[in-house]
Length: 149
Image 1 (cartoon, rainbow, N blue to C red):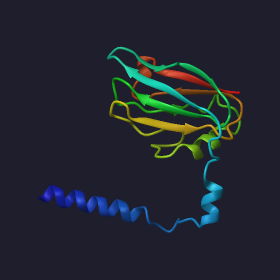
Image 2: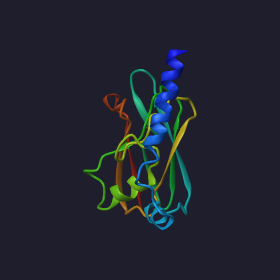
Image 3: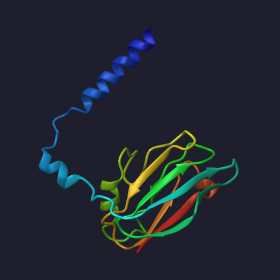
Image 4: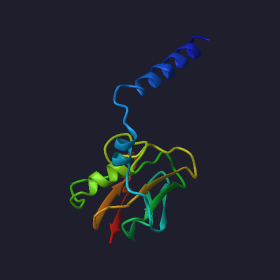
């Protein structure tokens, strides 16, 4: 009973924190929203077998405006994170706006269930290479590359 009370209290506190004074007006929300996806959808599987992690395919070429859907297939938890040091100029700003439910800048949330997914729109993304990795499985070689044409 005590634990349930604490959880309920924490949930209320977190909900209250989300209602702070930084509410946006509709015009500001529209300006802050990422550009809509206009192209094709691509799927990348996320796997880990206890020894090695992988994105499959590890490298993919897409068009600006396409959506990439990362799907947990084995060995969760997985997430999607990007290195900014090799990203084209302006790419970080586009992805930060397109990525929802993040753990930090350019870092998507952990997905723990098989077939859970995380989608990222590359609408408005500058052409170039976007190097991606899975935070918990980076030491196991789980990295890839998205090339935007």
